[in-house]
Length: 498
Image 1 (cartoon, helix red, strand yellow):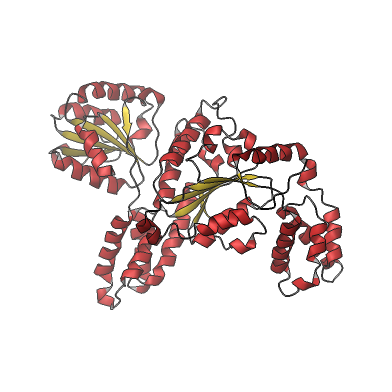
Image 2 (tube, helix red, strand yellow):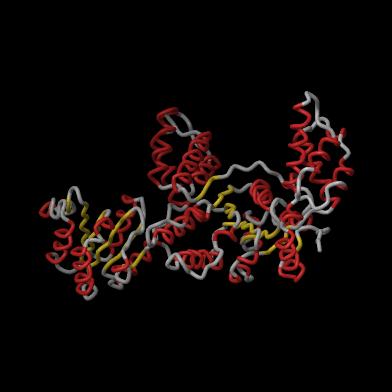
């Protein structure tokens, strides 16, 4: 059910108080007006500065007086929708709250509704049972296409530039996840610069998108140039990923193939889990969004849940995309709700429900180091397509990892290093520890004004105490968990230490 249909049903069902969290005030009001007219209802719009503005006879009513704005509702006969802008700021007032409760009793027996529009969801506990919350989605591709085509028609013909269908498609795809106001603003900037829209304006839209995502302070638009070949070892995992390379294409939809849902990578730190998330994005040609779960949790009651819904809405608007959740075990450890009024539990529940029911092409890549803290509900089938255990690399895989890093730091001199010897002399080393050993060897060579050698790498490695030795107990638990069949092995030659 789309938003317009849901609003229509909510109004007809006589929900007295409706709350719509959205920054797209103008667009929301347009939909409300259309739905209200289809039901034969009048619309009255109020804000704190100008009061009611819809009817000349009532112009200025309730100006700078939110209680008077509610009292005005009593004066209007049946068949009206009252839109209150930014009214969330007054809901904590005892008089406002009491008046809303009184109105809720009366309005549910009449064809009248109060709709609060605010940029964030902010309902005090005393009123939470009285409001119906409707989520207003960001513009879909069809809405974006209409807007972009309209702007192009009004500007480009006079400048002799005709955008192709492919150029329009690219602009629409780039604009997914932005509000119409942001799209209009960035296209106005492009027109001001070149007097028309051009295919190259995709870059302007993408930059606006990055700014929009940064402003949420929840998601990060993460550019990725990492390729599958940059990952040493992990053959089973790479084969699984390569097999799904075209799963987001139109050809896959015509075949009847559902979108891949996601992947949980559990294992030892520094073994390439985060690197894999970046490589998936690059190989599948999908934007990579990194979620900092810690930023979901805010101080105000209800704000964490609001941020979670905002994150989900933005990820779905940007789909198809890869949503990377790093160290998910730290975010949702101890979801018993103790100490935070159940906020963690509610956020986790919202996230789990979305994971199970989502139909949008958002591929979730979650990484975890400590599976003991993961709630069992997260590991249940249906949340992720697969759970992989990423363990310590074997000697052969260490050779591949050394080759990858040496080709990055010494692309024209890789053969000068004895890779087989390096792999043999570094048992229990993770990929991250191997790279750190090479960097330390570079410092040794640089300090002596020469290039670093195999012996320098071995000397540096001898000074590194691998995690496999300092965290033996934790790693043993991880390996026992993987060996019990609860996860697929990412490597065909997984190393288990007793």
